[in-house]
Length: 127
Image 1 (cartoon, rainbow, N blue to C red):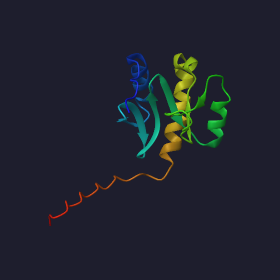
Image 2: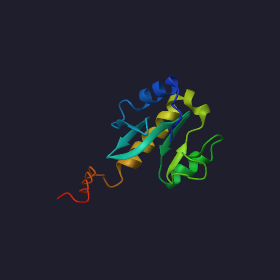
Image 3: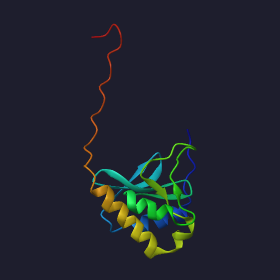
């Protein structure tokens, strides 16, 4: 499945907002994302910027006009993730606040270790 790339202006905005938060920038499915403690805390998907929040903060953000649950595929919402209203992209202070909450929330979750690489199965007849 091929995903829509994020506009360069949104990528620049995202990178500027996560700089200095302590989050690590990585790509997920070709989209820029931020990780805290090995857990994804924020990212871009097409023209959307999303954050991962605890229950209370998630409810507060969803109460804002234009905020929606993050659904990378229609009907497949990611439980703790919310799309930040596009109108907030121009409000650096507000956006920084939500990203800081996302970094704190994800950083407080149990740290993820590195995944073990799957061993290749031997082809039948080979030993």
